[in-house]
Image (tube, rainbow, N blue to C red; front, top):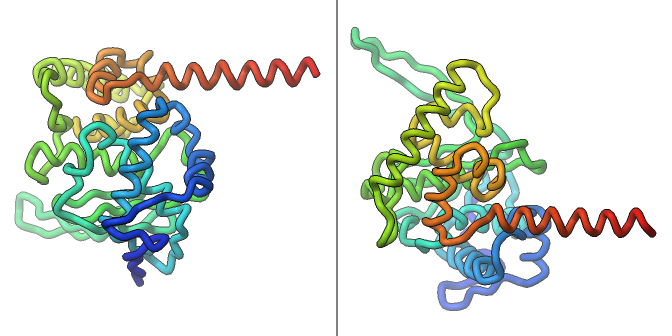
Length: 269
């Protein structure tokens, strides 16, 4: 059973405001938002309000969605479009939220024309021209951000008119598609070789499935573990930092220095 929530905190398309206390609560749940410069946080908050007024949320399997859950999803969903804006998310409205993993029925036809049916267990899926399906977990999954990942696919699909994702989103003026392709292609090839060799990798091995998955996982890391991404794939990090016009690794380092300073002061007390 799906429950549709068309209204959120009484927001309308002409009046959207996120209560400060609720925003701070969500920020505390998503500590990587603290790495954003103030002007980028303000933009993210504005985009999140726009997202909440334009999209419809559906709780699957009886999941009751709270304002905090929906704002958390909206804020993470808007990170991929932090620079480009909501244009990449036009032509669809639905966000389906599952309480944990969910199963999608599949069928494939082999070369002999035989249809094979099976069930695919997922934590997220993005449909071209359709809704985004995500799982909700009360605890953060280590090294995984399914919301950023799935909405990265939506951003990626925009460059193909809402069709297939290929790891090349629409780039802003001044960025070179050739330089982007070179950085990501080389990194993807090296990453696949690491996975094939069963080596420890800086990114989730799922990124080796397809260039589009590598892009989505890299974007998860860009916002959630930027220092690690920069160390493992500096050319990819540089392209993303240019695309978004900011350096989240600098914000991460600043926050960690601040946290260490507070810890040192407490030890001296």
